[in-house]
Every structure is written in structure tokens, then in C-alpha cells.
Image 1: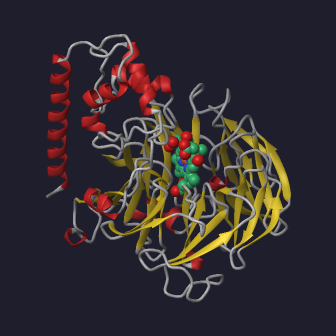
Image 2: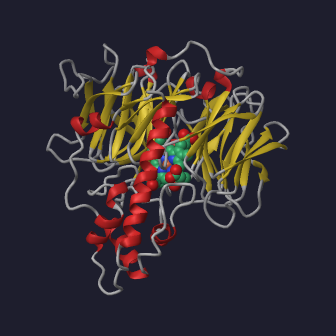
Image 3: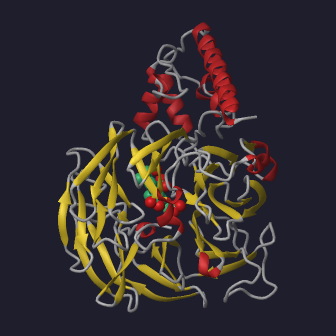
Length: 520
Ligand code: DHE
């Protein structure tokens, strides 16, 4: 079946479900204002789309972890008024304020016990839209496929494919609800893999501009990583406490890997990353003082014990046991070291070969290391990272691990970017009264040389450079938003495209060549 037919059938099924829900609610007696029974209300109005168990269905999962980005007040107005441009209808004509509040309280209540979501449940969700052997060899458009960008639009859950040479959108497609984390690419850049907070993984073909396959790999997912040989996708989950290993070709599930220490205590996964020179996945654990390394090549790198532990799927597993829990990672250019942020408010450098924490570094607040970048200054390589709690960018010498400079900014920032061909690094001011500002830092002097306000009053965030580094693309993070293109040398606006709450944007070439100015 073609994707178009699937979409048509899905649309028909959704229409029938919404119509049935509407007819059902239209016939129901209005709910009494006194002591609403939340479970009964949920079963009557929500279960058909969001699942009787709240784990999601055609609508997203309604669990506290999955709803973290939605404030309770906003959840109440979605229940009452619906969500524009989605299948979520408003229920204010049948639910009074007390009933809405009861439902809000219910969906923000954790489940009594962790649901089981193993191989059979995951396998059942898999959809193949276009088998790989039916795909053509060449792109269906004239643009250079390595110059493309994927722009995630959070507003109506779409993504735009943008030609980075001509600087114009090529195609727009619907995504799963609430994508998060960086999309990751196959080594040749042809396929992009997208993860949603609800655990849906999509393999999308950038040549035919169509999805290949989808699977739900978790209930509350953090992100995914793709092995640099293009064989595996590893998905890290908060719920359940697992990693899901997929074959990167059409997302066939290979193994569900329980995340637990030797004593049997389980942990959420903060994030998964690929360390190409080592041929490993590196896994950050949220609740245990361990970092995991999982080898996907035949010969494991240093640090793996011969005949050691294996995960489901037969990959070698190494546990790096640490003094404390590390959130959020960064790797140095050669993947010899991992830099993590400790809960105690400092950074820690872990040497991957020996598995030892070798030095603590000065990284107070909540550094957003996942967004860190490196560059050369005066013959040394520095790492720069924004901070989610303080208005500061820390610049650290990666030879001595000493702080070279703390650059004061107008507020805490989320994302930082540069490019090998640019003299500047860009950092946003994501939080606070100056969230419409973006700082441009001179990489040699480490001074802010310009502060741009592309749309006063609206959050400006997340920059990504074109393949040649000549242009920087920035998001106006708003339902009535835009992607703004700057000349990366003159810092003048070149053009802007209206978009629906654009968040991250990802250039194929910069990602597959692991440009030092962007996240990996
Ligand atoms: Fe993210 C990436 C964690 C909140 C947008 N975010 C990441 C990554 C991690 C992470 C570990 C790296 C994954 C990768 O490279 O694949 N994010 C977290 C959190 O722990 C946090 C603070 C709380 C949470 O609810 O998860 C969080 N993140 C947010 C947001 O509120 C943002 C701004 C909006 C949203 O989508 O929810 C947000 N995070 C992003 C984006 C990326 C990301 C756009 C990809 C950045 C990139 O360029 O690679």
C-alpha cells in the first residue's frame, strides 16, 4: 500500500473516530458539576483516541512524563477548546470546568505500575510505507540532496525540507506528535530518522520525499542514535526503562534492552549518542551512576572486557561506573573523552578508553552540553556550551580542561552553533525577557560582537548553518513564526519563510560530516 493510500485510510479512520466521538458526546447527558468521576470521563471521551491505558493511540500518550512540555492550564484549554489543525476536538459543550479539571488531574497522575512494552507490543506497531526495494536511485528533485535541511515545525507537527543552496522550501510533510532530539541521518544522507516524545520512530526517504517505515519503540522516548555504518538505530526511553535496538533498514525491531544495574535497579535513559571512531553507542542514564557503551562493530574498542556482557541483539555492553550521575553529554573531537554535567553543579571528564573520571571542570548551573560546540583559538581547541540556568556561555580549553572565559549573555540559552567557515558562533537567549535576542560571538576574541533581535517580542532560537557556512538559519519559535536566513559574514537578514513554530533545523551535509559547529 502506498503512503498516500495509508494517509487516506488513516484520515478516513480518524474522521470516523472523531465523528463517532462527536455523535456519542452529543447524545450524552451533560456531566454534573459535582465530584466528576475522572476515570469514567476518560473512558467515555478520551480512551478511543488516547488508549484505555493512556499510552496513546491515534492521539498522543496522556502520561505526566509525556506531557512535560504542556502546562496544566494549556492542557485544560486543549480539552475544552480542542487543538487547531489536529484531530483533537473541543469538549466544552459536554464537559463543565470541574470535569475538565478532573481530567487534567487524571492525565498528570503517574500510572500505578510501569506498563509492559516489549518486543511483541513494539512489533505490532510497525508500518512499512515503502519497502526499500521499491525506491528509486535518484532524488525526485533537482536540488543537491546533501545541501538539504530538515526543519521541524512543532506548531502543527510537520517538517519542511528546505533546499540550502537556493534557500527555498521543497516539501512539507506531517510528522508524529511532538518530535524531540536531533533527527539523525544515514551515513550517505539519504534517510533521516525522526523520534517523537511518544516513542514513534520514522525512517524518511529524502530522495523520494516519503516515509519508509515507522515503529513505536517506547512509550516516552528521549532520542535516537544511528550507527555510523548505517546498520542500527538505538532508541533511548524514559518509559519503560529500556533501549530499543532497530535495524536501520525499515526499522525492524531487533531487541529490547532492559536498562538496569547489576543489582537489578532500573533507570530511565537520558539520551543515546553515536561515537563513530569507537564504533559504539554511548548511553546516558538518568537514575544510575553508570554510562553504558554498546559496541556495534565486530571488534570492540579499548575498555571492553573479552567475553563480557552482551545485550539482546548480541552487541557487547560495557558499564562505565562513575562516582555520580551524569546528565547531558558532549564528546571531544576524537571521541576520546566524554564531558558530562553532574547533578552537583560541575562538569566531569571521563576518559573513554580507561572508563575513569579524570577531572572535574568548572561548569556551574545547568550547562546544556548536548548543544556544545568546539573550535580552534590560538592553537588550542575550545569547547563552548550555553547554560539552561545562567546567562553565560562557558568556554573551556580541551587540553587543560580549564575555563578560558565565561561570556555573560542576556539570559540562559538553549542552543549554540557555528561552522568551520564562519568566524562567529551564535547562541540564543531562550529564557527570560530577552528571549527574542540572539548573540553573535567572535570565535577569536570570545567577545559578543552583535546582538540580533529578528522579531522583537518573539523567541529567537536554534541556528544551523548551510553546508558552505555562508548562511545561518534561525527559528522564530512561534505559531506565527518563521525561519530567518542571515548572511553569516555580514549578519544581515537575507530572507525569511513563514513557519509554524519552527524548532530545530538540520543540514544533511553538516550532520553526516559531523561538522564541529553543530550537534551530533
Ligand atoms: Fe531537548 C535535543 C534533553 C527540553 C528542543 N534535548 C535534546 C537532546 C537531549 C535533550 C538529551 C539531545 C538529543 C539528540 O541529540 O538527539 N530537552 C532535553 C531535556 O532534558 C529537557 C530540558 C527537558 C525535557 O522535557 O526533555 C529538554 N528540548 C526541550 C525543550 O523544551 C525544547 C526547547 C522544545 C521541545 O522540543 O520540547 C527542546 N531538544 C530540543 C531540540 C533538540 C533537543 C530542538 C535538537 C537539538 C539539535 O540541534 O540537535
